[in-house]
Amino acid sequence: MSGLVDLIVAIIFYLFPFIILFNFKKVDLILTKLVKSLRTPDVLVPYLVVSVIGMDALLFTFPYTLYLVILVCILGIMLASYLYFMTGEIYFWKIFRVWWRLIFIIAIFGHSILGIYFLYCMW
Image 1 (spheres, rainbow, N blue to C red):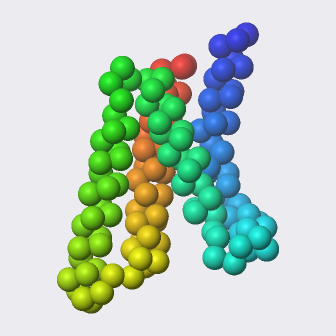
Image 2: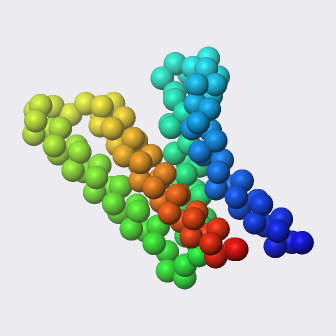
């Protein structure tokens, strides 16, 4: 019985970001009342990063999350360098906005792949 409960909790844990993304209009209405510039993907990034770290720790003996952090840092440096050489100035709000979207894409991809593998291992 405990294995079935663990599997159901893992499925809910895996599907939560996708449920929030499919209902983004309702969530955006709530978020825009709190902060004007806050959107659904902005709120999901910390959850996705923590879920990738958690599934990585449970599945593998070597922490592959370190590579995720290095990838995100390199992308941020490349983005800042590109924008500086193209415009001659650095606008931190623009860099941070694009960088945060890149983190979201990487985190949702990692959450999807690790989640499928995690559910496969639990089955």
